[in-house]
Image (cartoon, rainbow, N blue to C red):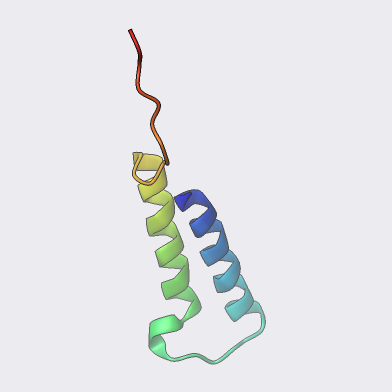
Amino acid sequence: MLGIVAAVLFFIAFLINAAVISTNDTFSSTNVMLLGLTALALQVAGIGAGRSVGRRS
């Protein structure tokens, strides 16, 4: 799930950068890209991976 969030944040960062949209410092393309990298790192770490299927004996 966080992988999808990361992809959306990267796309938003690309649009801000490509369209040269002037935003305030909070929502600059670099900050949105860093939020995407954070979401991607959490996904790789296993946080937000969704349901984990337990092992039945």
